[in-house]
Image 1: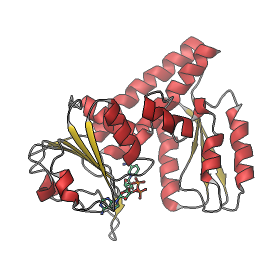
Image 2: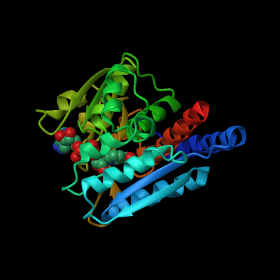
Image 3: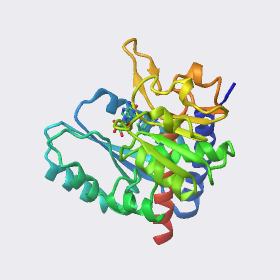
Image 4: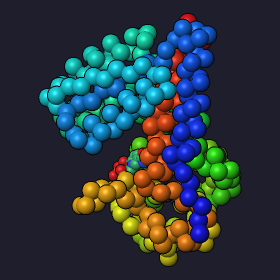
Amino acid sequence: MAKIIDGKKIAASIRSDCKIRVEKLKDESGVTPGLAVILIGEDPASSVYVRNKIEACKAVGIKSSSYRHDADITTDELVVLIEKLNIDPEVHGILVQLPLPPHIDMERVLETISIDKDVDGFHLYNVGGLVVGKMVFSPCTPYGVVKMLESENIPVEGQNVVIVGASNIVGKPMALMLMARDATVSICHAKTRDLAQFTILADILVVAAGVPNLIIPQMVKTGAVVIDVGINRLPNGSLQGDVDFEGVSKKASYITPVPGGVGPMTVTMLLVNTIEAAERHAVQK
Ligand code: NAD
């Protein structure tokens, strides 16, 4: 049976370090880390994510401020708001909750965020930085996966890593971050022919497709490490990942549950990035 990687526990331990870092920063430089969260429209899932982020900030001593606007806000108005936050010395991180309404120019919005405050890591500079290993901030979900592997002492160097899902926010940055750690990385996506011929080779399998039960035991090598990023809400309201947890946990050496796996790590890495941004700001003061 696979060992379950307890994302909640790892996240709790990183969050208690965060609390200490925040207190130290306040004592030594008088700076309180500040995160501005922008939410556009009424998407219920986004509202829940934003609420979780704000609560997580509060628990470690980060001062969060939320900016909620109706879905009819224009790109120009959003850009003006971000420009104001860019020069606000009490704001060290700016997060725009995605997805944005379709009429908003998302690229322009993300590119307006100051690189030093781009704690989600979605600015083109940070995306490009991932390619050459010079990013200012790592995107939170793949960063959380890396921290989970580290905390279980799972080696990455030289391992065959297969990533299922090639999105800009999970799959692609995940691939780059593990390549930077000298893994041999393959990326699969919806157009991949015969997914199983790739997944069966994985020493470490990271799944972020958004398809419940996509990965079944026959697709997994005995002893593989399986990281399930997927979050799918089933008709009965429960959450499920992309991996057949019951079946695959009999074959894998490590597996992450859903919920309680990668999810809590994502918010935690947002806290880490925000504190890092504030620490850099304090040094420059
Ligand atoms: P996305 O829809 O932007 O991308 C999905 C990717 O999976 C695409 O590259 C697509 O080609 C691929 N894919 C879809 N069906 C496939 C199939 N049958 N076989 C192989 N590949 C397939 O999604 P995303 O934003 O990257 O999110 C992926 C999943 O991860 C979702 O369930 C999302 O809710 C979850 N997620 C979780 C966290 C977290 O904190 N745990 C964070 C972000 C996203």
